Length: 616
Image 1 (cartoon, one colour):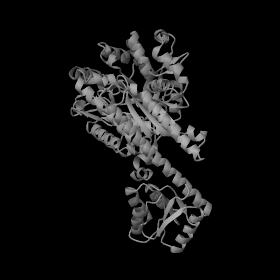
Image 2 (cartoon, rainbow, N blue to C red):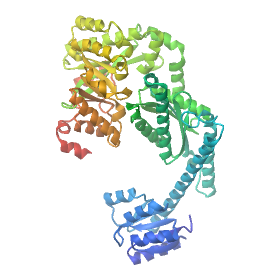
Image 3 (cartoon, rainbow, N blue to C red):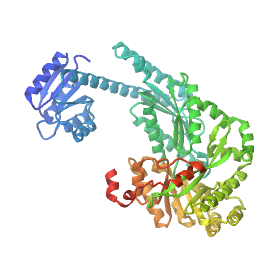
Image 4 (cartoon, one colour):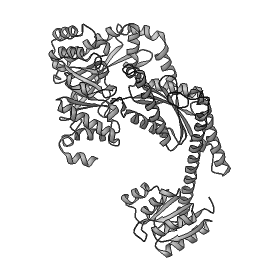
C-alpha cells in the first residue's frame, strides 16, 4: 500500500528522523514525529494515520504499549512496535496490546519494509472482514424484517433451512469477490482463494429427547430458544463471517466463511461444545445439554450446499457414535459407514446373531487413584466387533437392541461377563481391582434385577464390593421413592452404586443425598478446558466439595490434559479416567497394562501444592 500515512512515535530524535527518511524513500507518507504517548494520542486524532511505528520506551507517564492500548480503544489503526527489548514479558505485553508486528532494534531496511507491508495488508483484511460482517448482519436483518416469515423459524427467530441456499450463495460470492480483489492488486492466487474456506456444520443435540421428556411444552420451547441464542451469540462474537440456522426438530446449522484452514473451524466448534456445556436455567432448575457436530468444507468436500449439509450430517453421526460432546470433520469414509449404521435393516439381523457369533466384546478403561497414582478400578464398555463395519460403539448398538427386543438379552450378557471377568482377575494377582458397569434404564427397571445380581454373586463366588453399578440421573429422577428402595436393596448386597454423568441432564441437587450412592462421576463436559473456563472450574470444584461432604468418592472422566489433571489433584478428586491415561482396551491389552504396574501420577504431584502451582 504505497503512500500510506505513517505516524512515528520515537523519543530519540536522530533515530526518528533517520526512520522518516527511510520511509519516504519507500514511498510512504510520514505525517508526523512525536516522542510521548500524550502527543501520539493528539496526532492520531489530527492525522488519522494508516499505521503507527511506536517505540516502547518513550517519554511521558505512559509507555508505548499503554499508548497503543489507548489508541486502539478509539481508532482502528495498525501499530508496529519498535523495541530494543526482546524479553518474553515485553513481547507478550506488545502482543496483548493488539499490535500488527514488532521490530527488534537495530533493524535493516528490508526488515522494516516487509513488516510494514505485512501489517498494512493484515489491517486491510481485517477491515474487509468487518465490512462483510456488517453486510451479512444487514442481510439477516432484511430477511427477519419481512412480513412473510417463511424463511424464519418461528420459535427461535433464526433463519430456517429455506434460507440456507441464499446465505451459502452470499458467503461464496463474498469469498470469490475477495479473491478477485486480491488478484487485481497482484497479491491473489489460487492458493489464496483455497485458503478462504467455508465450513458447514450440522449440530444435533445429544440424547435431547430424554431432556424433552422431563419438561413441559413451555419449558421445552424456552430451552430451545436459549440454546439457539447461545449458538447465535458465539457466531456473532467470532471474528469471521458466519450465520446460525435452525433446521428441523432440534437440529441446527452453522456456516462460517473466510477461514484460513480447517483448524480455525475445529477450534471454534470445540469452543461451541464448551459453551453448550454451561447449564441452562429453566424454572430454577439447571439443565445441561451436550451436542454432536459434523463439519464439511466448501470447496474441498463439495460445491453444492445440499451435499455439504448431508456430508456434515454424516460426520455428525460418526461424532455421535463416539459419545457426547464430540465434533468430527467429514471424510468420504463416513458415507458408507453411516448409511450402514443408521439405515440398513440387515444390521438389525446381524445383531440377532452377534451374541452367538461372539462379536460382542467388553473393553475396559482404567480409573486411576489420585492417591497412589496406580490403576484402582476399571469401567466396562460394550463394543460390537462387526465383521464388515469394524468396531461399533454402544450408542449405536443400544437403539438397535431396543428396536429388535434384544436389550434384555444383551444387558444380562454384559452383567454376567463383567462378574466373570472380576472372578478371573481376582484369581490372578489383581484382587484389588473393582469393575464398573453401566446399567441402562431398561435394565434397572427389570423386576428380576435383584435376583440376577444375587444369583451371579453366589454362583461365581465374587466379593460384591468389587462390582460397581453406574446409573445416570435420568434413570433415577422418575419414581424417586421406589428407585431409592430398589437401590437400597442392591446396596445391602454390598454392591457399589455410582451416579454417572451427574449434571448433564435435568438435574437437581435436592434428591442427591436421598440415594445410597457411593461414587459420583463428573462428566467430561465439565472437565474439558477446565483451566481456561472459569465456569467449568467452579462447577467441578463445587461438585467435588459437595460429594465429599456427602461421603461420596469422586471420579472425573474425560481427563485429556495434564492441566486438567493438576486441577483435579489440587481439588482432591479421588479417581481420574480418560485418554490422558489410556483408551478403552481389550481384556488382553488391559491385563498388559495391569502387569506393567505403571504409576500414572507421581506422588510429588499428589502431595506437593507447590509442584501443582508451578505447573499452572
